[in-house]
Length: 372
Image 1: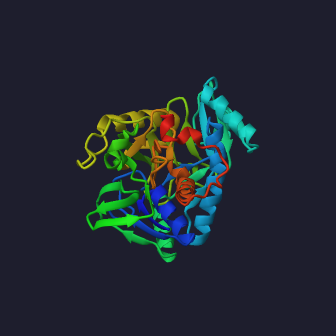
Image 2 (image 1 turned 60 degrees about the vertical axis):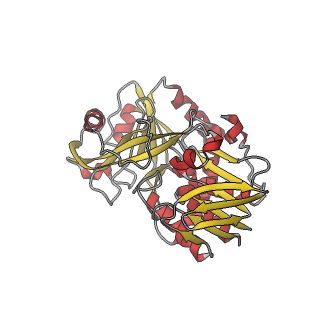
Image 3 (image 1 turned 90 degrees about the vertical axis):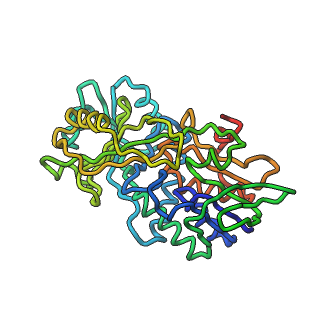
């Protein structure tokens, strides 16, 4: 089949690679350069974890891990840094209980730690006496930009064509034929996959997809003392504070300091083409205040900061679907700030759906457009 992939971030780059590997005529379109920083699939680190308060997501992560390992092996470079992960919060936080139950239901090994035990094993972390932590050894972080670049490089190796810096004007179906109209002109395809991230609402406007693109902020704080406490060698896991809704990483070896951020959706982006403001000073102060109580070995110096985009659905579920029963267009969106770890699986699933391969074993009904 001749198949277009529109948008070559995490999911699109993976879909293009899988299609090309399967022998299809795969053609990718990206409005910016590959690895750009305007969307959600760039940077040095994205958390990968099994620890979800949602059983289906935990199960899907088992499928994702296997595909990430395959990509890393084929690419011949480090894409996944395994350093373990802590999921912590108030001992009565229902998300902690749900996450622990999901690990039990999927027979995944984990440790439940008190605040004192957490401090003994991971000395940079200061949990309060009313908090508990779940440690899962398979967590870590993905080097996001490298993952996208690896997918594209290997897709090309398998025969894919990539059009960078090519604006897509429309995906349209007429007389039972599907076309991509871009700055290069109009071209017909057997199938079209749209993985355009925050631009999905504009490109597929007629669908009224329930997507809200929001401006997100991340910061790196300098390490004041005991740098050995913050290394990705098992002494400083990736972490999520379930109760206060923050997350962070060990030293990633590329940017000085350690990365921390709030997970909650930021302000709504109404113009995706407008220049984004730098990280807000009041946000930086909130991060500093949190770090003072949680990680006293950090100091207040910001070594790096950046904004990015979440493309959110109301409940954090993804959208994975055929546009309609008659259409030859397919889409994936709504990664909602937690989707990068799934992108390789989402790319696999949508490449299968678009080629009439119904072999994926999990029930994805809740991700249909009609479910929102």
